[in-house]
Image (cartoon, rainbow, N blue to C red; front, side):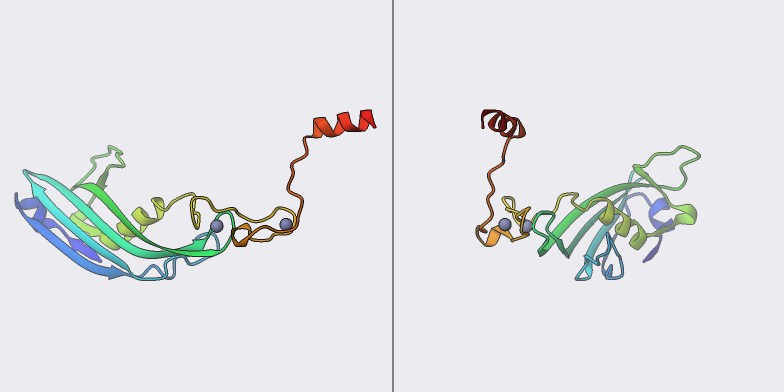
Length: 164
Ligand SMILES: [Zn+2]
Ligand SMILES: [Zn+2]
């Protein structure tokens, strides 16, 4: 969604609301397509005494395999982003500010990068996911397997050999 923001920049006190859905179903991350539903986007742009701010709320269904047990888990996610919009950065690089060249802003592009940058780096089906057995690959959330899981300390093992 391409926004034209000239009216907001020149009118102190002006406010605009945007509500729409954005499809990210063709976004591929690490070989999977994690955005199962459209993203609900609500954005508010307001000019307060010449300071133009953009607040974005998004919610969507997200699905990817658990980092430990590799079972697909779907979660409802909500995120909030805030940006300050400026007409020009005048050569100053500042990643808190978004430059709106010719008062144009591609809101969907900004929302897409905000969402991707804020995805959780750790993703677990549940906080105490037991993961998979390192020997047989059994999903330990479904119960124990028959493997011997005692961790043998290599120093004790060496000592045992000496004593034998
Ligand atoms: Zn898991
Ligand atoms: Zn096992």
